[in-house]
Image (cartoon, rainbow, N blue to C red; front, top):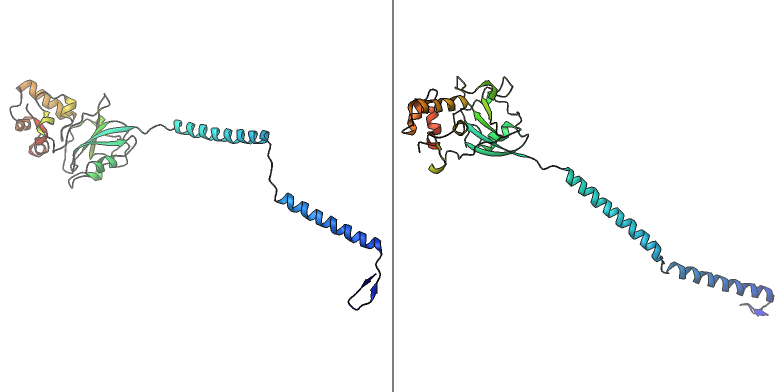
Length: 244
């Protein structure tokens, strides 16, 4: 018998009490079990770990192999040498990547002079090999170069592109060169003479013919005796040539 708050007797069957106690015990045990499992450690077998590690390693190796193949597949860009002469501010050799344009070569040579015939130059013409570019002046009337030295474009009258069979361009200094690097007009070959500003294949042959017929040049000014070389051209080449 139990008494409530009002002092009255309350009768409860023993079976009901037993069920309530059992229910409390089960509830407590179940709660403890769930809490214990939720905070427990996760166990992974060594076999599973080995398999997972191998898979990760394989993926890394595949990635490295793929990257290596891509890098090996890329070929280094080929460089070419271009000798820019004539109506540019800095006559000399410039280095370009194969496939760059005439405009790139002229820019690297200090840009065109005010007298350059830029309106008759195809600035987007691609350069694929070692060449010499001769930028012509606006008032240059009779081109000395052969037609084969000019790109196949009627709008390219302002430039001559001269390539050598050897695929190389003889490197010479610009107008600031020292005496030791000047072209000896008494011994230079046709290819070497063509590195002089204002000298193309035709003029180079004329210089050689003049030497054979008249002997050596005694002074650099004597080169004006060669047909096609006047005072203006001589001023361009005077500091780049010698007789010894």
